[in-house]
Image (cartoon, rainbow, N blue to C red):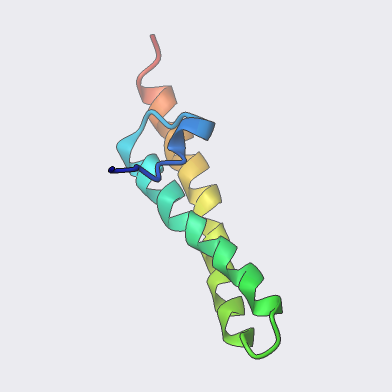
Length: 68
């Protein structure tokens, strides 16, 4: 049984570039594992949360260009 892990349906990105940036931003949640003692190196993944903002900017520009 095949299962897709696509979370872009939650935020409905119409731009393919914004959808990819959002998928990369999901790696930021690995930074929470840095709270586990001995796993502090995973705090570096929190930097991926910046891609959420980039995805929103790309989506905003896409929607401005493709108004109906």
